[in-house]
Length: 114
Image 1: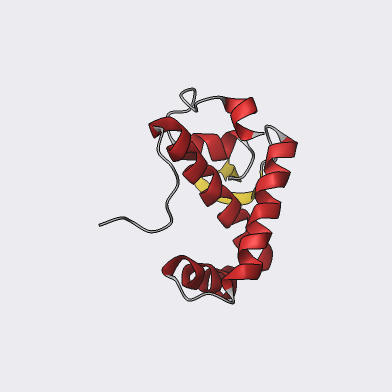
Image 2 (image 1 turned 120 degrees about the vertical axis):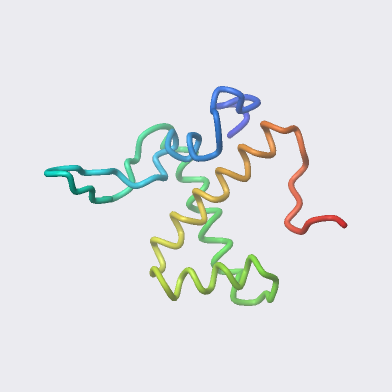
């Protein structure tokens, strides 16, 4: 579904632009020189955003059973920020990983190969 919507991801300068296009970044309110971050914007393709959020929820379920560095980061994120903020953060991170994989033409690897 992602490839059908964005192709090879060359329309986006970086992964954050893809995450923003999908509505997975916070809205920003500014007044009087002060800036405040709000809820996610929910812009872009709602179907892709839903798929990424469901995938992030699946990552959260599996993270408690694993001991790799990514799973530890996920568990600490849930403790620090709460369940739903962690879900959105993981969905945005997955969108950025998808952008990098499509943009550079590499296969995804969770662990670096030495």
